[in-house]
Every structure is written in structure tokens, then in C-alpha cells.
Image (cartoon, rainbow over all chains, first blue to last red; front, side):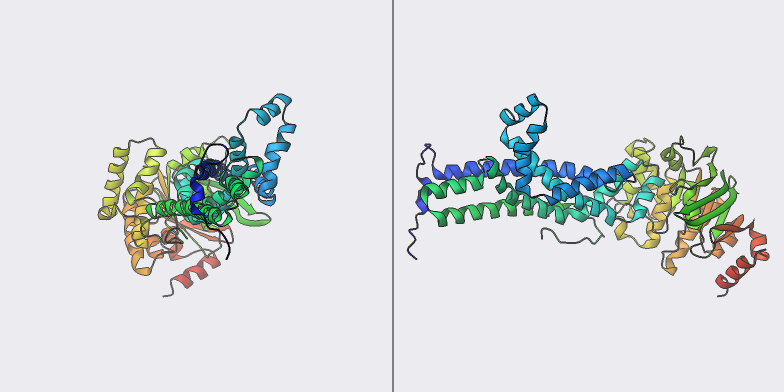
Length: 245
Length: 242
């Protein structure tokens, strides 16, 4: 192999005065920011939608189902372009202009990735709730709980435990999916990766490093959720996995 | 206490309850029996509004269950219910299972709720298990906790929906003992059960249902002595055979 290995190029200065390793760290920071922000949006909205789809109200079920259908069936990158370029045109003129010019890209990217992932979380939360025996709802209601209280105290605590392994996968995916946001101008890890290749041509080193970082981020998320899964395990109850995989 | 008048219920075009009329007086123990699919569980779930019904009326302690204005959660908090599959909350300790509705529905203080729960747990003989989770108890123990949980709400009456049908035979008696004691203390009870021994011991009246209708509604002695309907006779003959 005639490749010229040069691991020290990371410490060379780039055109902007920063060193290449600083580009990587900065990219990683944006990746983490987009991912965690989107995960928060996805968990919150996904839970609300998931619950809506299990209520006796036909209207709420229809709204939830439609959302999931739309957001699961359109590619993420197309959705991001929608949020950045198409939706602002349909807003009132001033608001649209504000979104295009003032609203930080980061917020739009978080919303785009968050709403996409919410559809997937909603599907899981729904299946978790439906996996519970119907009698649990009855038992809650019979004690005088309102419908909402049966979710809050009885159904959701168990549903989340059941679907935690699936949510772990989503949370790991979100780091990987966040790479797509480079296309709408977020200076995240994948963007920096492309930049560095163009500037230095040290493709192998940078690819190895970026691969390791994405792996590390997803794996860290996996460990955090495996820890939560272990901590929230119910004594005397057999659930799916032993944490993480 | 409980007035059921001309109640009919359909699932789509299938009629599950046909013109059911009966009542449970204060302090009375009424046993509901009948072959499976006869509508007994559905009827008892109509009493606290867990199952809606399309015709007729049910009045519990002066409150009409089917009236749109009725505050169902409030009514249900005063009517205890015990289910076939116990339905304890698996993610909570026994202590919390007993306390949660007292705190969140009745607004009792946590200490007070736990105290009350402990007393009832002691009464069903399970005080030593307070710190455990439902999955760590046997079926019979879980059902006794479920009875204690319902009693913790100070109910005006208790509904039992086949409380021993999901239990291993050796655990049935520990649950029936608790129910017998409750009946002897004068609790108003409506029990769907096949335990004819229990019915003989404490029931005041026995209701026999078949295909969604109340076929027989008689005092215990009349029911076991000489059931009027042929279907009740056949049913009794079958389950008392052994």
C-alpha cells in the first residue's frame, strides 16, 4: 500500500487558524447538540403521540396515526429540506423571514430530526402501552383514577420499561441520523469530516477517527440506557433483555 | 345500594346483556353465577361503569352510572373492585400499591395512606411482604393484596369478578377466607364466582345468568333447594357433581 500515513496532521493548523483536531471537536459538539436536542423533542412528542393513539378518542387516534404515517414515510433528508426551505414559504411573511434569517439553524435541525424520530418513538410507546393487559387500565379506573391518571401512574411506567430496548436503538440511531443535517448547513462531525478530507486528503486517518467517534457516541448512549434499564427493572418480573442489546 | 334496571348491552350487533334487572341491598352478599360467556363479568363491570351499556339504568348509592354528568372516577373510588387476574401494579411495591390511590384519588397524606394500607395488609395476613413487588408473591397472596387495596379506599360496597378463577386450587381458600370474613362483617358484596361453597356459606341471594339474561334471582336456600329454571338445575347438577 502506497498510502502516506500521517497521524500528526491533526495537530496542523488549518486556514482558519484552528488546528484540525479542533475542527473535529467542534463538529462533535454540534453533533451532540443536534442529537440530544432532537432526542428530547422526539421523546416528548413521541410519548404524547403514542399515548394519543391508545386513547378511546377516535380523533386523537386519527391525528396520531396520520402523523406517524407522514413522518415515517418521507426520507429524513427530504424532511429537513422541507423545514429549512419549504415550510418558511408557507408561513406568514414576517414569520417566514424570521425563520429563514434569525432562527438558528441548530433549532431548525433539532426540530426536523426530532419530529422525524418522534414518529418512531410514538410507534414504540403505542406498542408498549398495548402490550399491557387491558385489566391494568380497568384496575386503575376502578380505584378512581381518571383516564390520564391510569397513564401517569399505571400504564406508562410499565410501557416505558417494556419498550426501553427499542428506545435505546432509536437513541443510538439519532447520532447516526444527525449526520444528515450537514446538508442543511450544520457544521457537525460529518461536515467537518468532508472538509478535512478536501483540505488534507488524509482519508484513512480521518475516517478511522470519525468512525471511532460515532461508535463512541452511540455506544455511550447505549451504556447510559442500559444502566437506566437495569435500575428500573422490576423485581420478580421477567422482561425482554438484560440491558443494552 | 345497587339498583340494576332493564340493562341491555351490545357489542356491535351481538347482544351480551338482555334486559337485566336486579339489586343488591346494603349489607347483602349476592353471588352471580352461570356458564362462561353468560355475561356475568360484563354485568358486574357495568356496575362501576367500566363497561358502558346502551339501555337501562344502574344506580349505585343514589348515583346513576350511565348519566353523562356522573363523576365516574369519584363513584368508582367508593366502589371496591377485585379482578380475576389481580391487576396489582407490577412496578410498585405492595406498600405503594396499597397507598397510591388513597394519595392520588382521596388526597390522603402519604403517612396516613401507608398506615391504613399496613393495617389492611396485616388483616389479610401479609404484613411481612410489604416491601416486595407483586411479581414476588404467589397468586393467592396477590389477590389478598388486591382485596386490601380495594378496602383501603373505604368502599361502600365491593365487586368481585371471578376472584379465584385464576388461582391454583390450594390458594383458593386463603382468598375465600378473606371474603367470608368481609361478608360476615356486613360488607355489601356482589360476587361473580363459581365457588358454590362460598355462596352456601355467606350469600343472601344467588343470581343465575345464561346467554346475557338473568334467569334466576332467588334467595340462597331457594336457589340451592329447588331452582325454578331448568337451565339453573342443569348448571347446578353439573358443577355440584363432584
